[in-house]
Length: 526
Image (cartoon, rainbow, N blue to C red; front, side, top):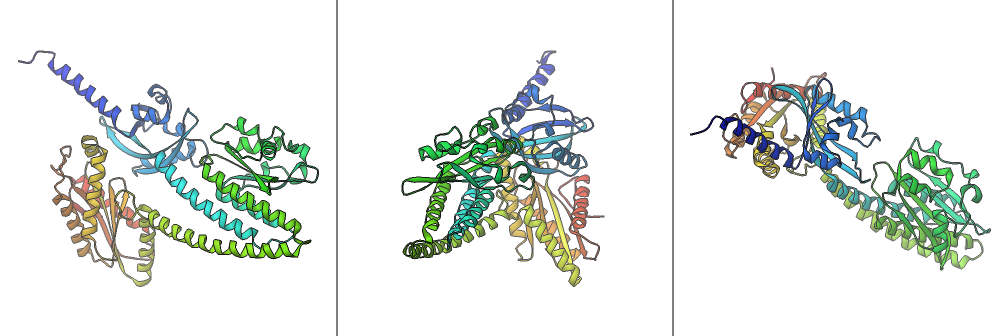
């Protein structure tokens, strides 16, 4: 027989179990008040992501966690939050500083949802730092190849005037490998002289010194062996690479004339390589980057060193060009070989770009079209139907109580559930003109061109039944014992005033009706 204190004990144990689950889920969770924006609760995982205690996070709000550089600023975060509060769930990538000095990438999902009977702003965060690092490295490899191709072209056919080639090298290195590029050449006086300064930002040029002010003394580069980074590299013949340094650490290796640029863009990485030929150093190339960009890698260093050595060779040959026709002929043959390699590498780059383009239009989890492709196809179909007077149908589906499913079965099971729904969508919508897509989170969409109202309703019901027939257990659902789908749809003969946003809004109205009427059903927009 249960004693008088059994019910409080059970409640206490239930709260303990909930707190344990709340703190152990893979995603970070933060709950904010809609009116004040104050943080009401935060789980332990969110604190681990940001390197801050839960107590500290309770004194902050979501907008305080960003890097502070656009688009990771407080104003941007507030805009996302306001859209979510208005009822439109938001998903976006967010870059945050970590006390360790590293940067953390989070995928944030913002949704207005009732918690304890009161509407709150629910923020869930997935740590995607590793994924972003892989994406950045893949992009970096392509950019390195692009820079090599571009520089090869810049160096091909250079005559006695190599100044133009140096400018092109700096432009390609600053835009492709990033960000600030400084080219120094050794003068007859044995000192390094700055020949080219280039950076890709519109607001960066006012922070850079004029070339005529950068004499060796003014620049602080007094030649090989000086305290400046370029001087050290010129003296030793070896490269210098600083990863994730502080602006103070970077400033020690750059002339004072560049310190304003370093501070403004929060420069954190520095790479300096010598321009070497025939055992001697004729100059240096300096790269510096900041903000949210990745640090320079060993691959960047190898690429830059290769380009620097080729540039050094070109400069040396150009200086001798006017006096030695035989050397000019050798240079022509070398350029032919470079052009052949450029063509080969360009073909490789085009192939890699094509693969990346395909990946960029596909949802990584489900293999369906992603939001980017969905938006483009819907715009295209609406525009085409306007011209022809055709019909367009749009279905929006939402897995019922999916958050509860994730909480109950875990995120790995949730991912498998979404994959199963996606597989069913591909089976139901097989026509070449149909586009099933992942709209975001547990939301899916289907674009059906040339569909009548009856056909659209039939297709939507087929999808709903197909998902239900999967018989995926869902013990946390308030609708059924299995995973179900609520669907809203709109179908219309496209009029001139109709836009993609109109179709999305109307289909969303139908989805809202399905949810309001008990879920696991299909509803057209009113």
